[in-house]
Image (cartoon, rainbow, N blue to C red):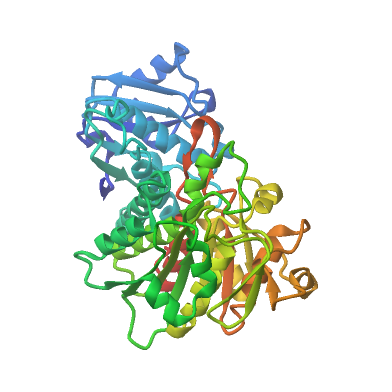
Amino acid sequence: MHYIVKSGDITQQKSACTVIGIFSKCKLSASAMALDEACNGQISQILKKGDMEGESGQSLMLYDLPGLSCERLLLIGCGKQSELDAKGYQKAVTLATEILNESRATAAIYTLPELEIAECSLYQVVRDTALSATASHYRADRLKSEKKDEPKHPLKKIILFISDSKQIKLAQQAANHGNAIANGISLAKELGDLPGNICTPTHLADRATELAKGASKLKVDILEEKQMEKLGMGSLLSVSKGSRQPAKLIIMNYTGGKKDQKPVVLVGKGLTFDAGGISLKPSPGMDEMKYDMCGAASVFGTLQACVELGLPINLIGVVPSSENLPDGDANKPGDIVTSMQGLTIEILNTDAEGRLILCDALTYSERFEPDVVVDIATLTGACVVALGSHATGLLSNNDALADELLDAGQHANDKAWRLPLWDEYQPQLDSNFADIANIGGKEAGTITAACFLSRFTKKMKWAHLDIAGTAWNSGKSKGATGRPVSLLTQFLLKRCGLDG
């Protein structure tokens, strides 16, 4: 999508369509009032007929109104003016874009950024406009023989109209940020939605190589199993033993910052399919275990946004990728493996495999001497029970880093919630036969999973994001959500001083 920010007299702007906001009880926004006056009150007269009252989710397309320079006028309901928040605003933008995608208007003026949103700056409003508009173009139809949902004349250009001409430069930056984040979300969704027979560890490695093509600041290295074996990654490799697909360790190194700047390292769990291994999962819903690589997908999406924006930061994405399947050579409950760090791990449940591949990837990350490390993983069903699908679970050994991520989630409307990482939980991981067990029992499953990872991050400022509840939707709306690409990109933008 192409975005241009403009200011001036809205009544003089020519367009195939102009989008205006209408509040409850037919209350007109500022641009709507100006356009209404220009057409001698035609908009108000039409609204009085009752076809639209301005409630959230309502819309009305008008054509060829006298005195206006636009061919179409799209009215979008925004609900009560005093209650319009970021979510309601994003809903309005998405609705407008979906309607225009079904019209023949391939370009449009959006006056919606002029609306006042509770606790949102102009930067945030414009960024959310671009993010929502671009994201609404995503279709999970790559593998369908007939792409019935694809619009025949999709919207290609949006002019974002703002009232303050002095803010055009800031607003254009915000639009570029929103578009890049949306493109990153779309990549994360696409990877998540692909089935396990296509999106294998090798496929992820190939996509990383593709991402680096034409990106001079991004270099990719792929470690094969023999290389990982030499490094002593016995924990990671134990998971891939049950699969015919070779494991990969994907390293994506983006060098946009100064040479002496310590990098941010993002570690994404890349289980391209998780059947649970010998501790086999129940068959209902097992198809959704293709989403067990959504942590990896979010790292890909964040790097995509980072490359597109050319952010002045050093960022490294580390993706340990494997399948977890039952096989004669697969991990068995009671097996003991040795991690890259040298700690021995008793595998009490082979379905707690994500932490087994993450721990070696986290140890590997030490070599980059990172400023901070954040791992992202669909790690525990316990997190879904605790927080549902609304908030990502956050645990960290550093308060400042945790606060950064919480703040980023709040500003990006991609929220996280911090859970405790107290020493009192660590004894649940005690093993009679090894240094540590890979599960800690029924209680506090999300916390004990993070406690396990914390054993491998003592030398680093580290945070863990459990996205098991937020990475995908089930049921009729089944599909990857692209979370937490927005949170992670906002986190990076803030570190670059580019968040408006």
